[in-house]
Length: 317
Image (cartoon, rainbow, N blue to C red):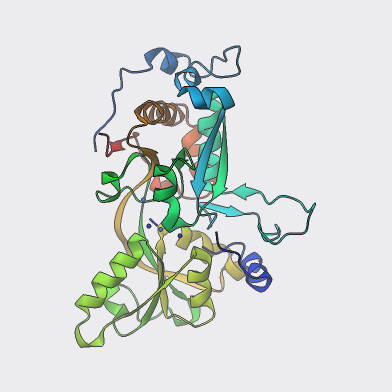
């Protein structure tokens, strides 16, 4: 639910490690396509590609790699392991940071259906759509809400459902249950996200009280602003809110209040003219739904409430 590389200081990374990573988006495709692949989803061809993987575009078949653009600062969707050094400032020869989370795990499950690897590339969230359309990445998998406005620019394969949650400091959770309760307060959001749009809309509804919207470059900074009393509340995606409320300082930092707001689908973003790739990914996702591997990933992260039952497509030309 995000439209966000930034180098965080070492002190911020230490704070981020301490909270174990604090952290945005139809037409159903042709189900007759790839019928053979659906019957034999993991029949490996001589090239290492599966039957379905052999239907990928030639450039991906040649490398057996799909480059994924993601804002890797949004636990539990995608984040670097807590002990990894800063990606850009780590010492020469130091260990490469590992990307983990719901999206990388789902991508790995899709990769097994295709016989390819999904390589995550760090891209600021508000640069993701331009990076995709410019060809620097093959797809977006970054907790991006599949909205009608974004679907004018790219196509989406819907893979998860989530709404916005309100996060406050646990010690000050009383008195806030809805957007209306945020009037007169300072609210942190990630810049370019649907949460920023939501906060700006609520500002207009608050009348003379108003609402101070504080857009920030990364999801990590959003929650750190709440933790360190620089904002009264944050608007973040449901899985991010639930995860950080559970793990940050062993559950003593944050509280999630009220109900999810405007739940909707997250989508794998694909270029409009890349219909072949979009349909192969949709079929691969359907296969993970059918064999249970999709739900296993969500259960691992305790977010099965966000499961979809089919892989819808939004924004197909």
